[in-house]
Image 1 (spheres, rainbow, N blue to C red):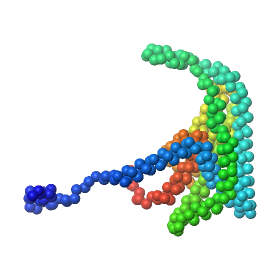
Image 2: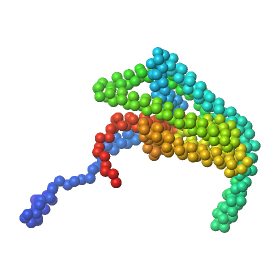
Image 3: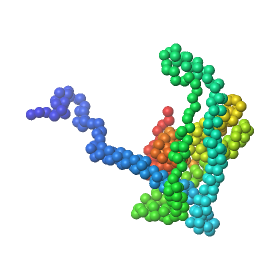
Image 4: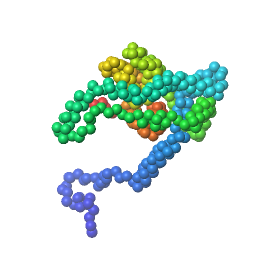
Length: 370
């Protein structure tokens, strides 16, 4: 008869030796059902991302309307407390926001149209002023030839401007997308209270209803505060940038300030794009390159102070956002939906964090500090 491992071990072990546990601990194994569930979840995520990408013309205006409408809902509630019907308040708010956006676009569009008509002339001026870099480039070319490199930098070549028209076409929504956004935005703000009630009453259990109500309240509060505070901060950045441009003799400081305020709504990418614009305009409009770099240098200081001190102090008190999460969300939504996706990245991240905190609360004890 064959002996089991535990029996064989008992027969050879001397008296008084402790008997080992017969239960053999096996490493955790992923079951087939768990692997299938993970694969199905991954396929679902891929399908959702593909649908959002290829149906961008529909989902982008709808999502934009939902996010902006949630941000503007507190203003509609305030008007409703002053005996203004919510539907009328929604129309008034959308008209007021549209007028403000049109004013900013007007400030930006005037210098853009003027400078776009002078692109060949401005390109020649920029190339002439950048001749100061010909000698360093020639030295670099000689160094490359000495070490066996290729001759690629004979002179400083300016980028071509064939990208301007495709970029403007990409940034400009179609009339159907704009109409869909406006109609959805007005209807969303006007019917937000009914939508809240319907979402809460969709659950039968009282706990689920309370959780849904808390999520909706926090989303509305945080997004409303985010829009208000970020708008005030960006307007301040625009005013300071316009003052810097006026003090340094830059052309059309009002338009540059409005552009700085608008681009600052897009994290990371917006300030970088504005810095590039200020460098190009400063070099063209100033008599020397050093004078043209004064405004970009001051703008860098302003955006550094705003990004590291002002915005974290004001916005961070309400909801802290991890820098890596902000960057990854910005990269993903920009790849998916372009510049409008970049604008929506932070609000969508805020919504995701609020939903995660309520659906998956952290109940585990805190780890000791290092």
